[in-house]
Image 1 (cartoon, rainbow, N blue to C red):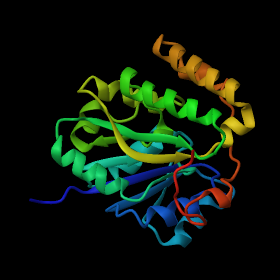
Image 2: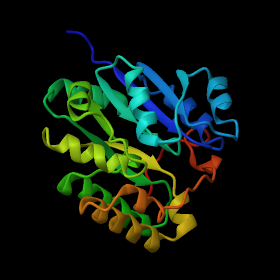
Image 3: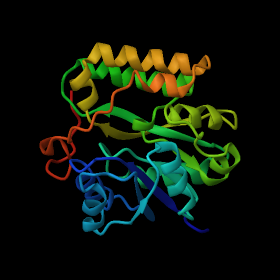
Length: 248
C-alpha cells in the first residue's frame, strides 16, 4: 500500500526572526513537501527561507488565505498541513498524522493539540480552551496546525478569499464534510501575541472576533481589531536550541 504523502505550507510576512528555526526543525519531521509562500516581506524572510535549503519558496499576494491556497496548489501530497512560522510540531507529529489519515480516510481534516510555549500556568488555561474549542465546537485556529486531506480541501474550495479569519473560514467549510480531528501530537505556539497584547485581553479578543465572524460580520471590519505582531520567537524557546520537554 502506498504511503500517504504530507505537504507542509508555511505562509509568511516579515517572519525573519522565526522562519529559519521553523524550517530547520520542520526538516527533521519527515514531510514529503515543504512550501513557503511569502507575501513580499521586506525583512529578508524569503531569502532566509531559501538559505535553509528546505523545500521551495514561492511569492504570493499579501493575503494569507490566497498564500495558503497557492501553496496547496503547488503541492501534490495527499495531506496538507498549514503551519504558522512561529509554531513548531513535536517529533513524530507528521508520521502520527500520516497514520491517522490512513486509518480514517473519511475524516476531512483537523489540527494538533496546542500548547503555548511558556511555563506560565495561565497559558495552560488557554491550551485547555483551545482544545475544547477545536474538539467540541469544531473550530480550530490556524496556530493549531490546521490540516486537510486533499479531497476535502478541494471539495471545500480551499481557504475563503477573505483578508482575515481565513483559518476559521476553512474550519467551518471542512466541518460540513465530517467531524474534525484533534490529534494527540503537540504543536507548540509562540506566546508573542499574548505577551504583547496581554493574556486576558488577547483571549477575549479572539473569542469575540470568532463569534462576530460566525454571525456574519465582514472580515475586513474584524481585521481592524487584530494588530499584526511580528516579534521574533525567542531562540531559547525553540527546539533548534533546546530539547522538547513537556512543561508543567
